[in-house]
Image (cartoon, rainbow, N blue to C red; front, side, top):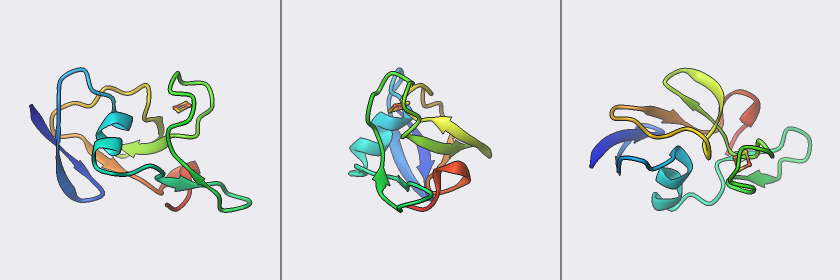
Amino acid sequence: MFRVTVDGASRPAYPGQTVAAVLLTAGRVSWRTTRGAGRPRGLFCGIGVCHDCLVTVNGLADVRACQREARPGDDIRTGEGAGGTA
Ligand code: FES
């Protein structure tokens, strides 16, 4: 187990766990909204196709949370970049 930061809060993560899994275990079912209609989005396809799960990781915007493995010390931010507000 190691720690990451999700929107400023320290959270546990485990080797092999995706950023999306870290967010889900933090109780987040949506973490951004669509640009036009403001509809909630989070994990949908889980295989990197839909881009509904975008987050910012260590300052890099528009990372697909379902494809990015969490790493020790990651700074995960939601509601930034093309992801819009959560
Ligand atoms: S959930 Fe579809 S790309 Fe991540």
